[in-house]
Image (tube, rainbow, N blue to C red; front, top):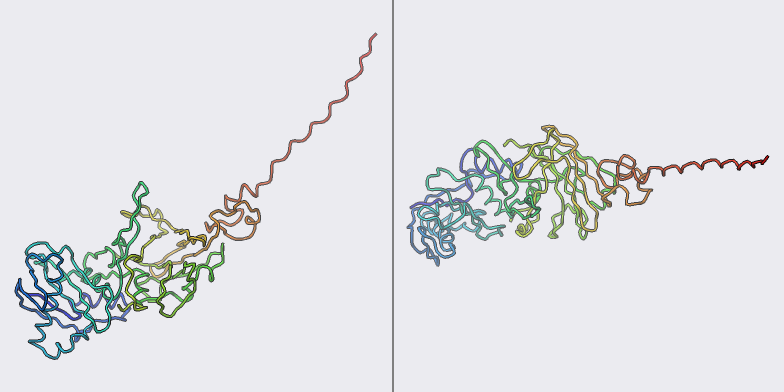
Length: 397
């Protein structure tokens, strides 16, 4: 039986190399001279180092099989290429490809990888293709290598018609770290969302697009931004810090986690992160909304009808509203507005004449129905009827 052990890998002319070059804006490349691929003959059942493996049925945890494959790769190089064997620890990626379910379906995964890789430590990815497959599944490979880099899955919160909500770990349908699969991975490239791309250090906010909600925005005053399509420019997003405890914009890498909203424009055809820290699997990036200005708005399966705006309430900070103003194939214009009140006026008449959009709904002062009851003049009191003339005295004759 054979398996392939690869240190980096060039699967095809439009495979993992093109995908990573496109999604990283040519910052991460898979050079041919570094893509070493080996076919190794191995027994289906045996011992490799301290691992007793059974590639027919698996073991209780599967660890012996997974790490046994890695040990067999080491042993192969020790026998065939002393130079490569000596440099084993310098290879940043070890991709182990084997149809683990060739005999019985014991593995239960298409791919698995370590999340975040320390320098000079083994960093493994396991790909489990079908027996009849002639090449690995490109989105699976990309996702697992994304884990190596330090990325978590791209998730979202899904609610049913009863209002019950739960996090779908793979819920982003337009991100390979979620659950998107292009129809033809050899011809089409699908890249990560803004939060993941920022985390990986591949892309960054636009000029002036790295914002602290409480320091860079004025309540009730929307700011307008133009965002290039993510495919066209690596400086392509807004990062809006909504963290009350850590509100400052810090362009340097930092170990402090920070709550933030990412806004980007994606035109769809359908541990080397920026701070060197692997993703927290308990708090993965969550896609909150997809916006459109199409008329009529499209209805997306599991999403419903798309909106043109998104509002998020923030503990102790009011909330933020993001509205899509317009779009072309090259760029989108959005407005961002911070509000402290969920209505234009909370009973204070001055809020209906302050020139601010206090609830960030796009209607200012008297334009907002919230102010009609406050600004409407009181009804006029009915005029007092004239006094009746005094009764005339009757004369008796």
